[in-house]
Figure 1 (cartoon, helix red, strand yellow):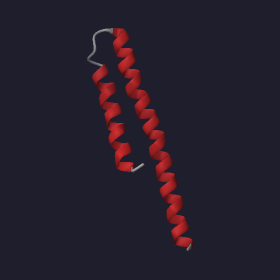
Figure 2: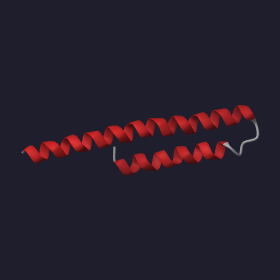
Figure 3: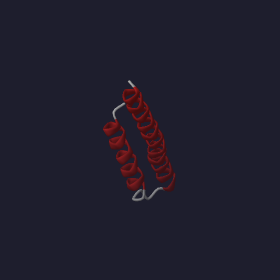
Length: 64
C-alpha cells in the first residue's frame, strides 16, 4: 500500500473518532468512536510496517 493512502485513512479514523464526540446517544457514540480508534490503530500499525519495509528496501539498494 502507498503510505499516502494509509495516512489519509489515518486522518479519516481521527475524523470519525472526532465526529463521535458529537453523537448524543451513548451506544452510538461507543460504536462510532470505537470504529474510529480501531481505524487509527490499524492504520498506524500499517504505516509503521510500510516505513520499515521502505527502509529495508533502501538498505538493499545501497548494498547492490
